[in-house]
Image 1 (cartoon, helix red, strand yellow):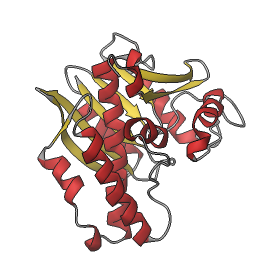
Image 2: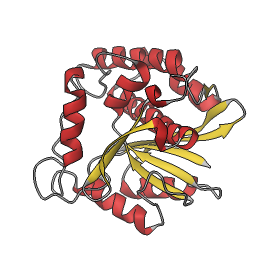
Image 3: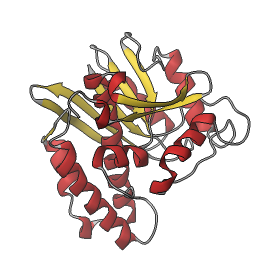
Length: 246
């Protein structure tokens, strides 16, 4: 079983970040962390990394979108539960989320099941990294990347790397060091221009998304918060408070 995380661009021409995790003795390790240039590159990445033993693909973008306007019910639920943490607010519908919706439907035709509790070989789930940060890291405010002056963006990357090291290296599952992960965690921020910084931000975001996939794979849906339904859309979040002994 592989755990894939995709920080998906919102238009076919937008870049994305993709991270692959594999379970090993004692935890999970990063196999690869890639910058993906466009829609076709992203599909090739998924096909190449889905693995013979199956995979869970988590996406930081809407997966099930059927409403023509306004937000989905699960978007409203997300705001209801996490608004006090000042997460970003989105109104996901068939217009605003056209590309993620098209991508998700294509993945379902490839055999991915959107039921997080499925016993099938390949699952596709939607998550939300800002809310995931609140639950995984215990922070009062999620770390925001990709916006603001380049200096503040670099500070956000540095802070998020600190949180990953503090919480995920000792998490359940444990995120174990590997050369691709070391590359993400030690990239020298002062040397990065805006383009290179953006690529790093996407890969780090994808790392958190892949960790959510691993969380689901290792802890089951019982260890997750689930907002919404499979007809109108849902958001799956890792919830340490649901684990035995928490």
